[in-house]
Length: 260
Image (tube, rainbow, N blue to C red; front, side):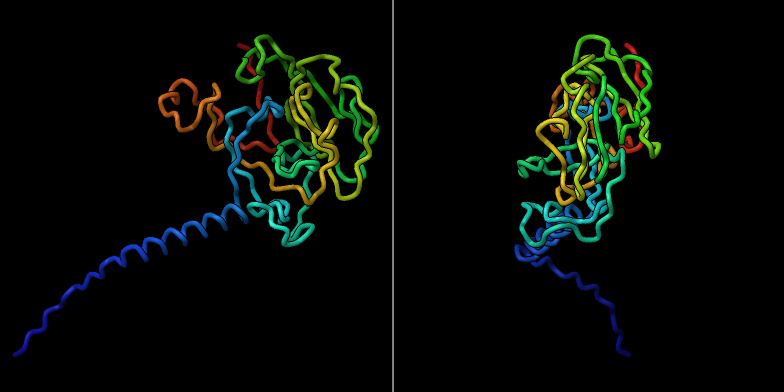
């Protein structure tokens, strides 16, 4: 009788060619995720305090508003306008390309929709001649949040669609507290920072933002570190990592001010 023994055959690795193939596939997958789904951004300035702080790292959903040429790395001029478009909602925190310098990514809150009349009067936001409800909810005395070494008044605004968020009032009667009336053109949006006295936004040189310039909607903070530290400086994590901000949703929420 002839016995037949099973033999397991192990295929050897294809060497350099297989490694290159795996790397290329991984890069293509990362490109698709970054272009179509989510893109990581870090916050480089204090214009969105207290909602977003310098050192926050967040995911931006690219599919929220559809896709324009700015959704693709290096913004190749493949098409104009947007495909699979979904319009931004009032109160959204959105990343966009600055209209007069599209090499720069900005992040602000959508306050004015196409056709809206927007104005600041005495620090109060007016939309179509109606004051947006604004209630003082306390003070923050924390330089990591306010960037100044003194207590800062915090006001909670509620937009007509119910979105609520906190704003800082660093300088009462500041330069941006009283403006002319802005009429938002068709296909454009009026963007403002929550740090009302320290934000370059549509009140100033940013102007109206075309829908095409939108990159995506801010979604969730996945990492946050203070003290202008780099995430790679692991030895600073114990003292600088902001554990209370990790996995925070940033749209449609407000952070309760705490006096210290």
